[in-house]
Amino acid sequence: MKTIIRNGTIVTAEGSFKGDLLMEGEIITEIGESVFLDSGWVFDAEGMFVLPGGVDPHVHLHLPMAGTVSSDDYYTGGKAAAFGGTTTVIDFVSQGPGTLADSVKAHRELADATASVDYASHMNITHFNDQIGEQIADLPGLGITSIKVFTAYNDRLRLHDGDIFRAMRIAGQNDILTLVHAENGDVIDLLINEALEAGHTEPIWHALTRPGWGAVEASLRAFALAAQADAPVYLVHMNMDGEVDQLKYARSKGIYAMGETCPQYLFFTAENLQQPDGAKFVCSPPVRSKADNAALWQGLEDGSIQVLATDHCPFFFDGQQPIEYEGQMIAIPGKELGKDNFTKIPNGLPGLGDRMPLLWTHGVGTGRISLERFVALTSTNPAKIFGLYPKKGCLRPGSDADVVIWDPDQKVKYGVNIACHRTDYNLYEGWNLKGMPRTVIQRGDILIEDGLWKGKPGQGQFLHRQSGEIL
Ligand code: URP
Ligand code: ZN
Ligand code: ZN
Image (tube, rainbow, N blue to C red; front, side):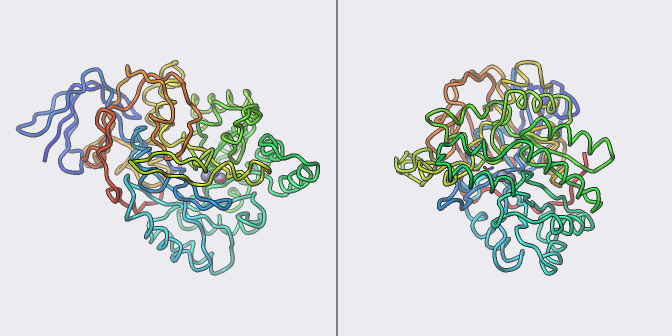
């Protein structure tokens, strides 16, 4: 079956031109100013932009946390992704008590049956010994070419520096990228204990007990460990101006260091946690200050930051009140679990579907971000860094036909109903956005057409990744 998208402006990370894009089955077969088609479907994309499907390399679907679970699973999360123009997600395999291969198998059993967009996985390394070190070397054979380590969440997820160094060294020797969650776990624990002893229970204490200097210090520590281990490193969820400085410093010294930020760190500050609904904004690391927002925007603009991801990890604000989702009433315990104690608020925010519309309106629409950089930040760079390119992240013959027809003139009053995450709130409720996906195609199949969902569970495939590129 042949399908052609005619007369759109085709945008890649390298440039844009008006032309046609031909797909046959799951693959793009031809792109040019005027492509011949004998028979098949024709989409007229006059006035539209034609973009590669978005790649979000940081999502947590169906993640158990704080006595509940993140409220989007592989089906609902993929659907929300598609509504925002994203057709590939990378989430995280939690390390279980057995081997890493056991954890990957369990994860895939859940995800493969239900995923609605293509997905890949990072492996969390949250305990380490010689055997785990050997198993890290086997991960590429399972299609996993990145691990994530944590310098915070003591006694739960954190590895100590020596183990991070050892894990990174093995990763580097096997062309595996190490992702680092950078905060100072010891300081956080101490401040949390002091806050609780003093009777502080409100959401703002989540931010006050996770100081930004801890993120700055731990990010430099991550880069220094990577330098000593001779390994590439990627800083997740950058939230501080000082992290941008550290990333620039590491790169200036020739360290293979890269990083991402997420929309919440571009728009919100710790003041949002002081609102009556402050729990909605609780994520780790916390949202910071206006100066940090500005520095992160600047990093996206000038290329110091390579990727805009989301760290999508949604919870209900009131998990006692069911919402309707595809005709069923659903309630999943959420932020209310922490109403008497900020440490019990499940950490994380919805964002998967918000990412591209927000960057379009506030980046492309304001002239801060060029069309090409928009594609680089949301699709091409993550595809390259995480070993999915050129199957994903570009529009070229031979690539998967993951294509978004983007309407730059569509205006919406954004919010929970448009975003389609399976939760009861959206952080951008009531925001006026201009520029939305109109048609979203994955491997030649239509997922979204004129605001309607056409996808189904199990349609997404696991992506066996290669080693990535250093950008
Ligand atoms: O609050 C967040 N970010 N939850 C997800 C876990 C993580 O550290 O990325
Ligand atoms: Zn993290
Ligand atoms: Zn995360």
